[in-house]
Image 1 (cartoon, rainbow, N blue to C red):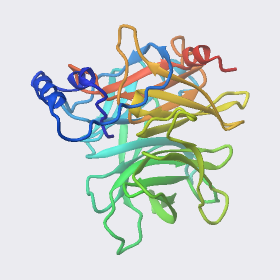
Image 2 (cartoon, helix red, strand yellow):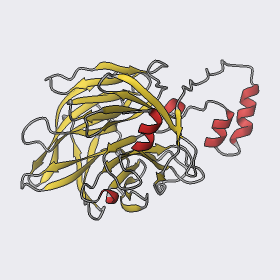
Image 3 (spheres, rainbow, N blue to C red):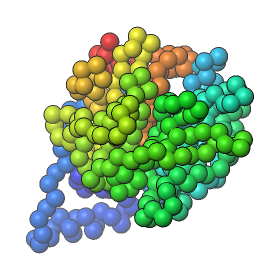
Image 4 (cartoon, helix red, strand yellow):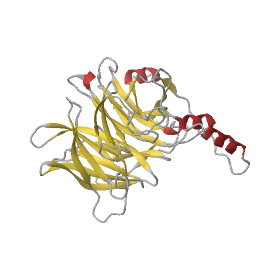
Length: 370
């Protein structure tokens, strides 16, 4: 995340009272070139309908990336997860209260998949990019108990070949297996723009990561998501574009999908990515347009922009400087009957950062999506 202070009011919202005099003095200075104002593209305001308990790390940029598990047997008992990138991983109920916390260290981005184990049992497998060691990227792995909301630590896995250059784990997402014997595919976005693909497999009773191949972007990247239906990886190069990477070919090759600028409605940084797919097969890619505190949608059938919204208004307050997002469609109970959207809130003052929740029905209705 890179905070962008567009004006004095924004800066005061993010900082302390001591910041205002400094900003006023800076505004009067005659040296240097003033920063260009940030773009602020039109978007529809939608109020948050729920929020989580704040993360435990206060006075810091700490909350980062969410994940969602929908309970098909009891949708209202579904679970949501979020990272405190200074401390570990939270599990919440849909009411936002904490079900569990794993003090697993500097976990940045998280994702989950339901996987089939060798003995035929099903497991909710949670993975996260572990940047505790900034030179040795790792994947932190957990089992999630859908009934209790409790996490079981499965360990951390290194995945790059021995002797690799120092690299920092940053973004993370998971996809469905692409070959027999796999539980899932894992994608770790390194801070230099490299995306490392590994397969997750069972070995000697544990989950192991085996590195397969890379794709490289020119500058810092983080957000990623896999469309399991089309076997496509989407990656956000923060200051530049969203890239599309087909996973079926032997070599990973990226093509530009949407770029920073008014045409696609993206203001850098481009941060979290998520895919909303309904029962009829309609699907949208959702991106955090962090630079103007908005969320941009793209119709995956046409690859055209499908609208923009902000989480704003209402008793719970809005979101700003959003890093990670997630959305899953389907029944989540009376409050979220068509699906759930979740976004990190970078400024939840005076409390620590948290995650805001929105009904997909509210988004669909506001943007006129079919």
